[in-house]
Length: 274
Image 1 (cartoon, rainbow, N blue to C red):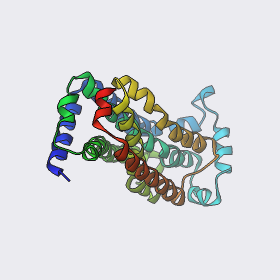
Image 2: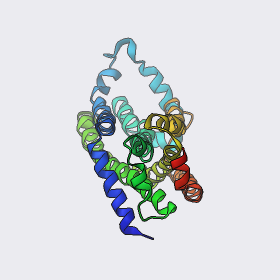
Image 3: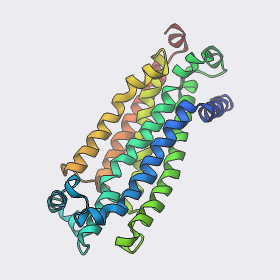
């Protein structure tokens, strides 16, 4: 394996990403909204619970949702007042699916630019003539987006911990986050889910005429995560360590399958012909 050539491709891609405002600006906005604004909103939860939210919120709905939670989750929330329960549910459980969605959105934005962006910048021929095999080129493009998304996720996760604990301190009076479930999520699930999304997006980018086309084709990757978020919010499913391990296992298996299929089907001549 020509690791030097692959490293050169990854380094070039990371440089292009930093210089591309069309990629960097959306990533910064998405990251700030989720990792800073959303946990910061937990500071408003006592006002909502005490009825200051008016007609925008109905605390009785939240109470019913908590009452339907599994015994294990109810036990974890036992001994807390309503403001503390809502705070912990919001920051720890309701937002958990979003940690999978944000890295996928970031990685998809980068992966969509992998080949389609090269075509738009008229640099695709130079890329395809690099001294790498088709499989090495495919894997290098995957790693460019994967490494960026994982690095951003880890940095954002640190922000989320700090902002969430600071915003919730008046009602929690302790550092309560992250818990074991989130550690499994960040270490096991997110890298697999990001890899799955990137595999789809790189394949879409290789066949698309431009970045916009690749983004539209790969948007379907986010639908399962949105579905998980909806089930979590409505109470149809609650995340726990077992579910996290299971989600991660499925995502890793699908990622491995897509990478294997993609590396076998990926061919330079098809990109030039598209």
